[in-house]
Image (cartoon, rainbow, N blue to C red; front, side, top):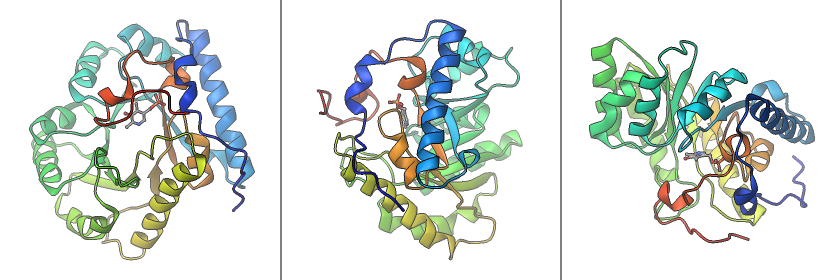
Length: 269
Ligand SMILES: *Cc1c(COP(=O)(O)O)cnc(C)c1O
């Protein structure tokens, strides 16, 4: 697989994505991101149809989410569950809009996710799996889930250590309301493309290895990795879902440390 050496991450650009304020802005940004997805796929001989773009709307107001919907977005990713739940409640009129919860979840908030989300990307403990499954059973619902893996080794990052994932996966068939789709990770937050790439390689390698021993009913096709600053590298390494916020909605006011405790807040470059 070619690994273009001239590819840098774009984490240092974050402050520069202008706020999308019209449906036309959203259409243009979505088309630009899609063109970058297509180009990354082309570089490594992948079919762009195998990569799903998940727009991430966290911190953005309801009006922005409605514009994103008008521009064609049918699933939105949110990091904080209470914020997501509030938005879901406020936008019940958009009956074709689905929600993906992509951030760390405390067990006591499992009932919220069980109510509104169709996808949960941050499964990282059996306790949480049990709580989600119980709530989902009560509601007669099921949920697509991704197991979050800490591929950067940073203390501050959520997710299972790679060596703990195999036994974790083996335990998941007990939770019949959870439809396991694959693995998710947040790479090292760095401008050094090679170090970021290693996180993605680790997730793909782990997935490939686990696939062979996965219990019946556990699907491990999906790899959710890559965000505004690094999604092209993630695609080159096999991402099937990229979670992109700022390149579509515009820069966020809050530093990333608000979402990922312990994250450096300054200029990364
Ligand atoms: C915010 C967030 C993203 C998207 O980050 P951007 O820099 O806005 O593209 C991706 N994944 C997770 C888990 C997030 O919280």
